[in-house]
Length: 64
Image 1 (cartoon, helix red, strand yellow):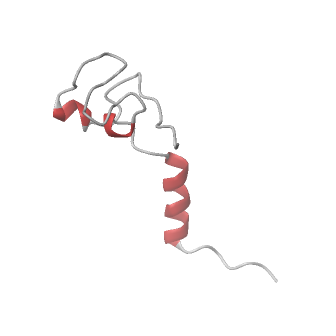
Image 2 (cartoon, rainbow, N blue to C red):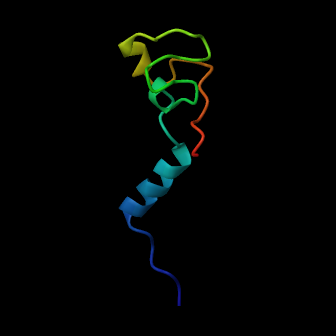
Image 3 (cartoon, helix red, strand yellow):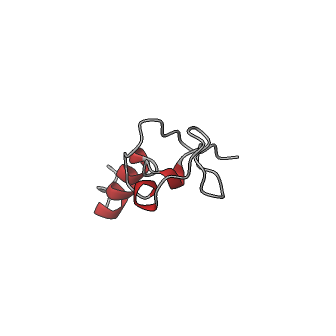
């Protein structure tokens, strides 16, 4: 007996997990709680901080 095909929402969820977090300031290890980028020691403009793939220095947040 074979396993039933996964529903579309499960397929989409697996793709979402593979993609990881959006690469923007708000998910970057270098972005502090007060909005300072500790890599460049500057506060990025709000539109830059919210843009995906705006910075090539993005580093995924450490989970702990």
